[in-house]
Length: 310
Image 1 (tube, rainbow, N blue to C red):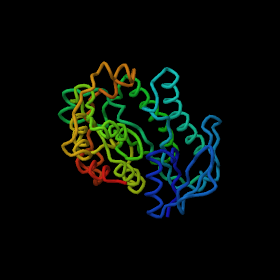
Image 2: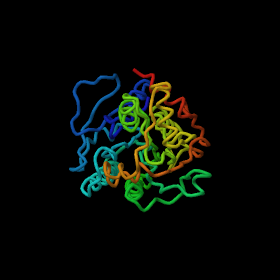
Image 3: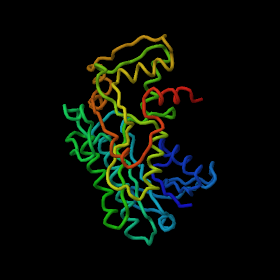
Image 4: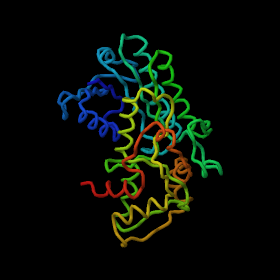
C-alpha cells in the first residue's frame, strides 16, 4: 500500500484520519516537532519537522506517495487578538511553504497533495447563495477568514508547478465527539439548555468527521480530482435546527430552548462572533458529482451516530 505523510496528524481530524488510513492498510507517517517512540497503531510512525526552522526529515519526503496537509492553529481555540490572527495565518502559510520547499529540494515520488482549507473562504450569504449554495468558483471574502483562506490556498499552490496533483478541501463545521463545535453545543444541553445563537436563522454548513476523513481518502484514491472542493454535507441546516436536533437526540423532550443574543456573543467572543453569527449556505454539489457518497447526509443521521458514541 501507499505511504501517506500527514501534517497536523495529532489533531481531532488527523487522529481519526490516521486510524482510517491504518485500517485500510496504508502506511502513515505523521510529521511532528516531537516524534513519538511508541506507536499505538501498526503502520503508523512519526517523523520530525519544524515549521519555524523550515526543516523536515528528507527521508520521509523520499518515502511518501501522497501528502495530506492539515496543519494550522485552531481558529476557534482563542479570542482573535491581532497576534492570534497572525498566528492562525502564519501557521498555515509557513507549513505550506515548508512542504513546497521540501518537494523542491528533495528527490521524491509524491503523486498528490491534499490540503485542508475552510469555508471561511466564502462571505455571508447572498440571495444567490441561499438559493444555490456557494460554489467553489466564488471569490474569497474580504474579511479575516476569507483573506486567511486565500493566502492558505495560495501558499500550497506551487506544488502544482512541481507536477503534483493538488486538491484543496474547503471544510465546513466538523462534527465530532472528540472536540470542536459539537462538544461546545453539547455542554449546555447536559443541564437541559438548548442554546440557540443569535436569531438561530443563520445557515450552518457542517460535515461529520468520518465523512470528512473519507473525503480526504477519496481525494487520494481518485486521480481525477484536482482543485478546490467544498467539504460539507449536502443538507446544511440553520443554527436553530441543528441545536434542537441535538437537544432531541440528547434529551428527548426534556430541554429548554434559550436564545443567546448577538450582543452577548460579541462580548464573549469578540471578533470571532462574526463567524458564529454568519450564515453560509455552501454547496456539496461538486464533490458529489465527482462520485463521493456521504454516509451522513442529514443532520439527524449524523447527530444520532455521534450522540450514541461512547
